[in-house]
Image (tube, rainbow, N blue to C red; front, side, top):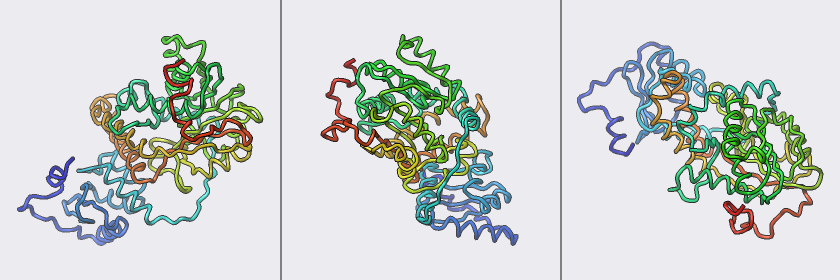
Length: 420
């Protein structure tokens, strides 16, 4: 939406009758509480009777509350009730939804205390299985509507902002393979393999064998069928199980997009799994995960409706919980936050083009919930509320450290894409 379009949506006609504010004492108190809580946001809030609160200048959106109850719920618990109201159709947004949520996140970050708030929850196997089923077993046809051709549901890597989503996902897989310095004949264990694209990519282009685990029945079924169709069954094994069941030794451990679902209470267990996989003094690994710059829980509505049990950790929490107890040294850290914002922009635009199909597959409530989730996730990475970390690690005395840092990403060495 350009500036002219936004102005047309947000500016009333010159002869419009301005509705009065609510007259009831409770409503007046709620309106003032909402105004204080939101502050000087670039947004207008329209009440059910048409009265509009002008909170800031140059508004990016008009938020319409369709009932008195919605106003009271929003004042009582805005972090949860905005999402609940939006998905139920009790809240409408005219204008730029991503810019609206980004403004809210930036305002919230400015008010947050820097006090450390440790989180210790864990996800036992049964809970982890239920959480995965809630999100990832919605049906492959749903995800196929808005993911790339290979069904990669993690941050892409854009060599340039103009790159296609398909090209950026391939670039991400090659980037990870180069950071791991994969060589033909090596054994790789992948924890949390999604629909299998990365495991198959490693086997096909880098000559390794892969054992990949995942709790999602839908994803594992899809991955096994793809391995069979592409003739890679002998080199890639997909296992429907929890990461804690891994007992195979390997040269490389990799996890892309799983750590967010582990929970800090289980980080030491994940560290023991990695140590069991790599042995005492060899191997290397990479953890790719959504994180934060300081400790704090994931947004409560996202946990309730989209990602139950999820937690985005800080680098410190991952190092102290997963790596330090087993004397692993961090070799490299890269933050791909802007790349995830770009990835989500592609997903959101594809999703918008498929909204009618999603409504037919599920219902309007589901369709609006996922629109808010994708928009809010993009806003989270644009605002810095969330980060995307790639951490390369190895035993403290490892000789796997290259002489030059650019060797992590250069494509000239023998294992590069297409040379195996």
